[in-house]
Structure formats: C-alpha cells, structure tokens
Length: 259
Image: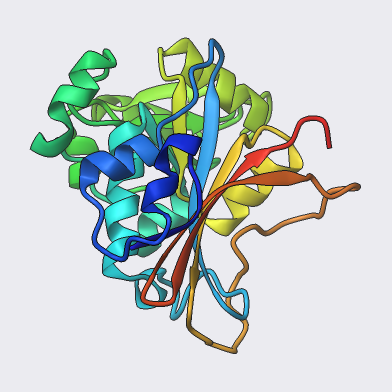
C-alpha cells in the first residue's frame, strides 16, 4: 500500500513505501477527530463507472485491502449504521470483537465491538438472525413513530433497542444521528446502502466519506454510492488522505464546512 497524499505531516516519509500497512497504522490513519458532538463517516466502494454494487452486492468490486480498511473503520466506530435493505441483501451479522483492536477500544472507552443500528420504516426484518439473537452489543432499530406496533414489539422481544427518530413511518437522518448520540454513540459509521447514504447527504449530516475507487468497470444499471433526490447545491468535501494498492484508491474526504 502506497500513501499518495499524507494523512499528517509526520507521515510523509511513508509516501513512497509500497507495502502492506499494519492494522495499527491503518487505525492511526483513519482515526476519528476529537469532537464533542457525534461524527458521522461513511465507507463505500465504487467502480470506475460509478457502480456501488455488482449483482446487488459490493463484494465483487472490493479487494483484500478494501476489507482491511472496512474492518479498521468498524473497529474505530461506536456504532455501524445500515439500511434494512442492505441488511437483507448483504446478510449482515453482528460486529465481532477483534483482539487486534481490543486495547485501542478499551482506551477509548468503547465496548469490545461496535453496535449495529438498522434504519427501517416497516421493520421487515428476520429477528431470529444472529444480528438480533447474538450480538456482543444489542442491535439498535432506528424507525419512526408510525412504525407497525407489532413489529416494534417483535424487535424488542428479540433484544433490540428501538429508537424512534421520526414522527411518521420513516426516519429523519438528523434525528437518527442525535438519537444514537443519546445512547452514547459519538463515532458513527454508515456502510450504506446507497439510499441511506443519500438521505444522510441530503440532510447535510455526513462529516466524512471514505470511498474506495475500484479499478473495475461493470456497466449495467447498478446504483451509485448515494441515491435519492439530489441536493440543491453540491456539498464540498476536502481530500484528507489517499492510499493506493494494486490499482485501488482509498480516499478519505472531510466535509468542508466553509465551502
């Protein structure tokens, strides 16, 4: 892995080093900023022609290095926020504790593994799956006040924590972020899908995007990394760092609140 754009001035000497970075180095490179409020970052992968998936899944356009960064970002997060459709499509399981990050998480006052928060209006989920029956940290359901009461009750019986983040059936992104912060989750990571990321973008609550650019072409009609209605004025982000391995570009963009 080569560093093409420095994370900090102190890491310039690694700019031309072509080797596999350790998990500690990746964790340092992707460390969340120290902030009092919640910090929401997204982690997505895209093909060269803008596809976020192939045959409905992101794995075909990913790589081993992409998965190392995926695991590192999870290990830095308090909670992983994901849409219900992505849970169903990708077969989501609870986040696991990883020994490599145990000391770092303990020092940061974090649980052994991040919680998973599922954004869903209808709670059309299988509550017998391990995501609900055997997580290290209880799974969170983010839904609206108009959600079906029987499904809310089923989620709670399964051990999930239900947070109402909207007055209707759906979830309001800003209220979802505040609701998770109210549970003590300040470092938020969303892994999509595209519809959910689009909602976060439209609500102007996304602080950082970690985007892997995959050296692949897929054609077809796959979704982009963010879907839904467009914003009136494009939100400007600034490049924080850029890594490369085997043609994959691992970018990190932070919100430019002045732009």
